[in-house]
Amino acid sequence: MSTQLSLSALTLLIGGCGPKATTPTAAPEQAAVEAPAPAPAPTSSATNAADIQWTPVYPDKPEGPMMALVNGNPKEGAFTAVVKLPAGHASPLHTHPANLQGIVLSGTVTNGRTAEDAASITAGSMWTQAADEVHYTGCTEEADCIFVGRMEGAMGTTPSETAAEASTMTVTAAADIVYSPVNPEKPEGPGMLQTSGDMKTGPFTALVSFPAGATSPKHSHSATYSGVVVSGSVSHGADAMDAGSYWTQIGGEVHTTGCASEEACVFFVAMEGAMDMVPAEAPAEAPAEAPAE
Image (cartoon, rainbow, N blue to C red; front, side, top):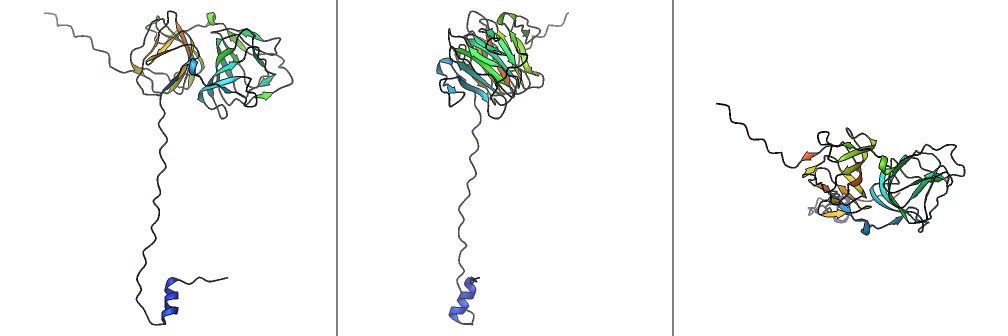
C-alpha cells in the first residue's frame, strides 16, 4: 500500500529538519451549486376540436384508436381523454383494471359483452363499464366515433379470449339524462348530473347542462377542473368551443362560462376537489329603507 505524504512532510524532507516558513495555500474554490429551477406553475388552457393533436392509444397500431389526453396519466392513475375510433373499428375482447364512463360526442359507439351483444350508443348518450369485466368496444361504419372517456385508474388494457357470462354495462340515452339545478334557488339555470365521486368533498365528475345564451357571472372555483364539450357551443373565456373541444381551469382563477349556441350546451367536467363557486365581486347590498316617520 503506498502512503501519500502531506504537503508539510514533503517540505521538511526537501528543506531539512529545521522549521521553514511556508506560504499558506488558498483553499480551492468550490463551484457554486445552482438551485434547481422551480417547476413552472400550471396554467389554464383550451384546445378547440379542430386543433386536436391525436396520438395512437396503442403505438403499435397507428391506424387504430386515437386519443387526446385532457388530464391525468393513463399509465399511472385516473385520467380523462377524448377518444376517436375509426369508422368500422372492432376491438377484440379485453378488460381494463378501472371503471370507465364514456359520453359519445359523434358517431355511434358499440359496447357490450360481445360484438353481437353490443348496444348502440349515439351522440349525447353515456355508458359505464365495470373494472375487470371482459367487453367489446367498436364503432359503426357510417362515421368515425368520438367520445370523452373517464377512467378511474390506469388504462391497463388486457386481451381476453372468453366473454363475460353477463354484462353489467349501463347505457343512458341523451334524452333520459336528468340534471339537478346547480343552484336550487335558480331551477332555470345550469343543471348537473354527478357521474362519479362526491361533489361535496371531491374529487368528482359530472355532466353539466347550460341554458342557451346564458353566461355565468365572474367567479372562481377552489379546485382545478377540466371540461370537455359534449354538445352546443360553450364559451369559456374569449372563444366559443364546439363538441370535442376541451379546457382546463386552474383553481382560484376568475373566469366566466356560458353557452353561445341557440340550444342548451352540455359539457363533462372532472374536478380535482369539492364543488364551490366564489363570486369575483361581492353582490351589491340593497339600499336600506328609510325609517318610517
